[in-house]
Image (tube, rainbow, N blue to C red; front, side, top):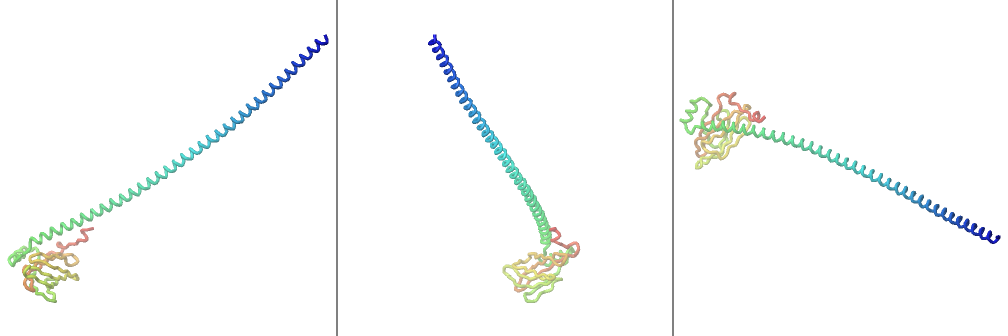
Length: 242
């Protein structure tokens, strides 16, 4: 009987010890699992925090880059606007210059056309001999002064101008003269007989016409014509160009 009790006690004690051992092992295993779970959670939280930091940095960098791009675009746009303004200013100035040049060119051309027309009108009224000169006098449109000038150092008076014969070429019917009107000296070279030589005289710019009909050795003969009506015949090229 005592032996049975001893065996029973031994079995119970072993079972208790085994249960205690199993309980200890289970507790140890649970503790290890809890520690692993906690470590995994900590690692997850750390990784999450790092990811959030990276995401935040990426967003910040993206925003900064976008702002920088916008600032660059704005700067380029402002530069383009300024260039367009400069181009507009330069274009406007160029157009004004072209218009002014065109206007001046038109004025000069108009003056040249007027002068050519008047010169053509005068040329059509040239007298080649005494009879034709008498006919021009009969019309009474201009005053005519005949001259006969010899080559020399002295000036010949013809109406209110002075003329000096410098050279003659009888074969070619050419001559060189020096004309003094007011304080101006006008040199005409290599001119031909019956070729009108025109020049302006006085502050009113009156158009005179000097015509040589005959070229002899060291001698010229012809006439000088001047306007009758000084007021109507006054010319002022400067005013025409303004």
